Length: 110
Image (cartoon, rainbow, N blue to C red; front, side, top):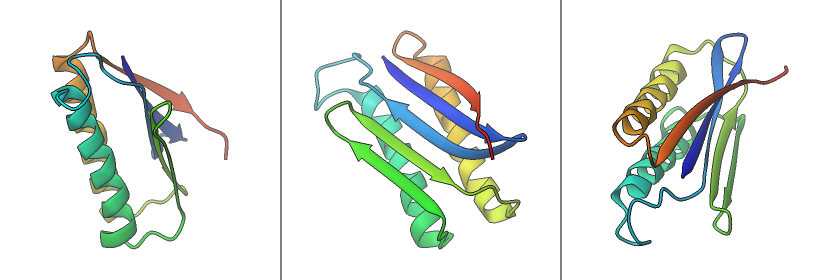
C-alpha cells in the first residue's frame, strides 16, 4: 500500500509525502507505483528547476521507500498551480486504485 500524505499549514499545501509500495504488481512492473513516483519526481523537478524554489526540502529513502517534498508556505500562484496539480493527480490515482493507494491530510505547525 502506498500512503500519501498531503501536508497543510492553514489551508495551504506545503508538502507531499509518499511512502510504501502499492503491491499492484511485482517491482519493476508496477504501474501504480510508477505513476505515483513520476508525479513525485515531477513535483521535485518542477519546484526546484522550473519554479526555482530555494526553500525546498526533499528526502528519498529507497529502503522504506519514501519520497518527501516540503516547501515553505507561500501564496505564489505558480507554486500553487504546480503543487495542486500533483495533489489532485495523486488523488485521482488513489480513487482509481483504492486497494493500493491511500491519501491522508495532515496539518503541520508553522
